[in-house]
Image 1 (cartoon, rainbow, N blue to C red):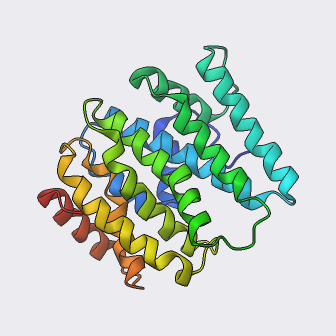
Image 2: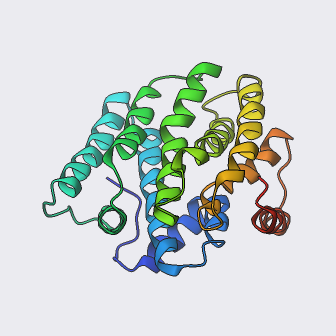
Amino acid sequence: MADAPAGNDPDDLDELIRRVDPDRWLTSRFISDRAARTDVVALYAYDHELARARRIGSTALMAEIRLTWWREALDEIFERRAVRRHPTADALAAAVGRHGLPREPLEAMIDGQIEALGVATLDAAAAVRWADATQGSAARLAAQTLDPASAAAAVAPAGRAWGLALAVRTGLASRQAASAPLRSALAEARAAARSLSLAALPAALPARIARFDLAGRSPGPFAKRLSLVWASATGRI
């Protein structure tokens, strides 16, 4: 059902995200607390599994079956039952338990992927809905994990920006459809980032990389890291 390392070592999951989601893995390096970083990586691994379920399903029905598998995993986590043996499910359960994460955004991430099933290309409005449901939810959960006192909604525009950039990268939306909402989301993200604590800021950092996507640039890891260092030091997305 899933693309995950065989063991339950958090370092295995970290390596998975470094391989399949290198940009967001890079933003997670700015989380100084190792335990919090592990839990944020678990959220990104969950997001990866949902996106993969949509991509590799041979039909929309098969993809929905895979996504339902993860909805059932949420049932187990929130009903405090034994969680199915899967590294990402185990890590997600631990993160939910440690931080009291709500179910609604985790569920929204599944719903967003289901809504995109069988759709060749999302129009601008649908791309925004997909970005909000998937990456906006992931960003809110990451912010709550990093700083429970922080206004998690303040990272929603950053999550939207990252989601729109991903939609273009993966062919889910055209650059033409996504450019205007991406530009708007980045402007909102820059303004909203002022209310984020230093601890919660890494949850919004993927939007900094989305600026390159808006400009049609694809810089190397060093340039991305340098841009993230500047954003982290100044608090400006």
